[in-house]
Length: 90
Image 1 (cartoon, rainbow, N blue to C red):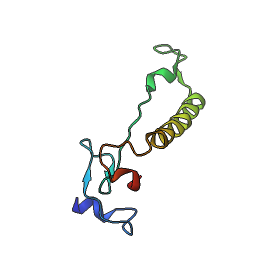
Image 2: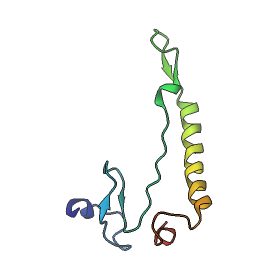
Image 3: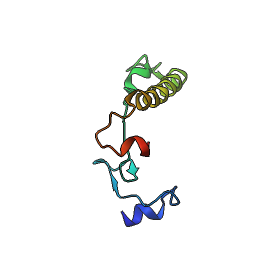
Image 4: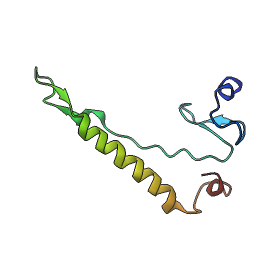
């Protein structure tokens, strides 16, 4: 955690105390890590052919929608979080 706090983008808010098990999201105390997943294979056009390509336009749209959906999830949860202090932290 020492090393990750060296690159903490919000030191004025406080020190980071932990990460989720995979370590991709350093959190402040009582932070909430709500992950979403997108199947990247779903955006491959004509897979396993010479004409295979990636639909970046559709991918861009889905990423945008997922960001809104995860943000809405936090709003809909209101104060129903695992830890009582989480609503104030999010």
